[in-house]
Image 1: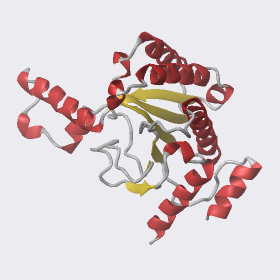
Image 2 (image 1 turned 180 degrees about the horizontal axis):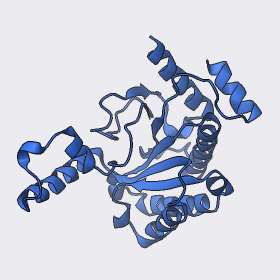
Image 3 (image 1 turned 60 degrees about the horizontal axis):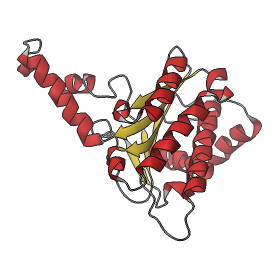
Amino acid sequence: MLRGIKNILKIGEKRKTISNMPRHIAITMEKELKATKNIDFENAYKRRDKVIKDIIECQIRLNIPIITFFILSKNSKDSERFSFLMDDISKFFTRLKDHPGIHKNQIRISVIGKWYDLPERVVSPIREIVESTKDYDKFFVNFCVNYDGQEEVIDACRLIARQVKSEKLDPESINENILKENLYTSYLISPDLIIQSNNEFSGIFLWDSKDSFMLFTGKEWKNFTKEDFISSIEQFQNKKRN
């Protein structure tokens, strides 16, 4: 199966008959790197950007409808490198907006989380890329920015409580569908595959991950590669066959 995927990627054709391909893959790349003498933060984030672009290329060639990248947790506000992270996110979305593949392949970019609470130098390029791709519908790429999985569920509960208080919703009618409708991800299907960096659970999509195949790479995101992404899909397919 992996050989088939590699062949498609090599010759540049789109998927035709590969079975058990995930429809939505989420990848966590948000964990802050620890400062050591051997780490170059700028190059580490450049590698992350390249991997993201490589994965989007794979998404197109393998015809995977939805990819979600978790790139900035809400906890990053407490980081000593917060200013660096804000500059990095700002530059990332500015470069992404100008990437010809986004428009050529009609990829809609969405951002999940409370990104609007970040500095204007981050908010502005996010607004621009979301606006410029809002009418695309061939592929969907989401970025979790200033996101927290627990807060997503809490905010959904708050919205439901307001609907009950205003008598727009009967408490007895609250069910799984009602909660889903009030999540940040109300418009998204749940991920089939969640790729977690390191061996730590990131808390991404706490509600939506109930039936997801969770794969822990054992690698820091800065060492994650396109080959690791392909291998993750193969492991998902093997799981589905068993």
